[in-house]
Image 1 (cartoon, rainbow, N blue to C red):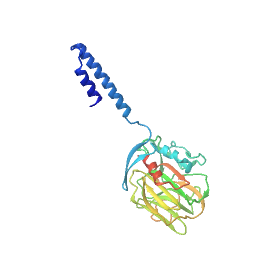
Image 2 (cartoon, rainbow, N blue to C red):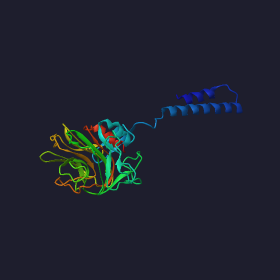
Image 3 (cartoon, one colour):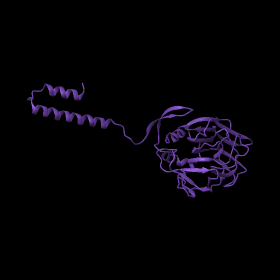
Length: 298
């Protein structure tokens, strides 16, 4: 029997006088019981902050997961120790510098007229700020010249309806068209996502479906002793465990543009669409990290 039922039964069986006085007493007890019940509900109610549980659903997988982050900015911050650089790409229209949210050591430079879209659907709904809009003549580069890494991850959120264009990659020219270029993620002429590395020949892995659908997508490409892996919207969609050693050359990381000539089904060197949260990591992100970054934006 519930606490409320026991109290009401005891009251009904008592010898208190009938009439207005008894009715008043019953009303008082009922009010006290209601207050106690409300307190119990408040104590049991879950909080609204912190981690939450979400269902990830896309064309490749359906999975329930406990999200580690509430925003993409938080996911970015959690892995900044492993990031070479991380660009939120949410600066105002006309900006010339892309802030490095990782170490601050390698800010990016917007080439072309930087434009920001603050009115369309966001890549990550709970993050503030607009998205970087690329019209086919814009891109981002930085001053960091380095040897091409054998272990790395690249990440970016993007939206487009155009088949073709480089999202992110490594080339030997800081701002022009590179003559040596790989470690890149590009959209093929069929609209599929491709991740390519080179060492005596082209090595590419490709997503099953087109991403040129006008929706926001999250892509991560990793390279390590475990080979090449391509993730799309939190799920692994392609891999090549046999290829583990890309060509060692010196160059720069580029976002939104560089040479794609000769690569399978490669179209324009320029990406046309919107971007948010681009990063390069010194490690191969794990499947759990990739899924946490994606879920933070859903």
